[in-house]
Image 1 (cartoon, helix red, strand yellow):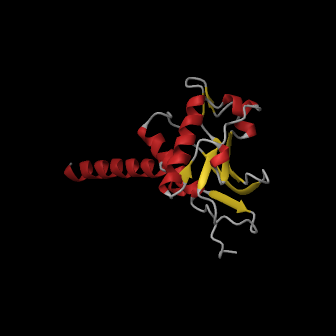
Image 2 (tube, helix red, strand yellow):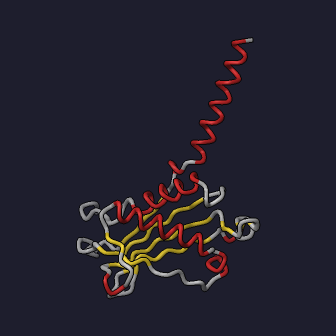
Image 3 (cartoon, one colour):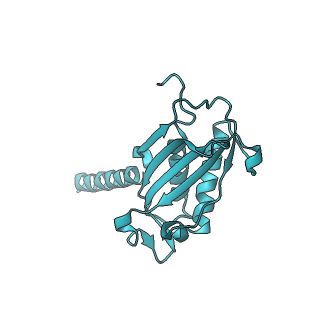
Length: 175
């Protein structure tokens, strides 16, 4: 009986561990691309751009979601030594992002109980303030399925922001 209880307990602990690993974004896949001739060495101040509400997907993104994503990106930029400035005139580069649900799942990824989009792709662009062109882009596919105001969701956003900005600025010797 004691052996069977240990097996059940061990199985339960293993299931919890697997569930925790599946919920954490350790496997976040981010792809980046950038203008290889752009000089990122002078980039120290970043201005996060407002979200354009010009598509159904961006109209469905709540003010709370926008705030949470902006906060996560700002915190990661600050952690990495950048200054987040409130006005474009003070910025060396602009950060613009867009979160889009998959087209085929646009309705399925919208949680009507919370009015939240819970899965999709996050595009983060760094835009040169003179050329007004993207010089760096990261793309992250997200499958966030829990309530946005939980500690787990906050940790997910933090890890996602770290993953998205991990290769910014790009290493000039990398290619």
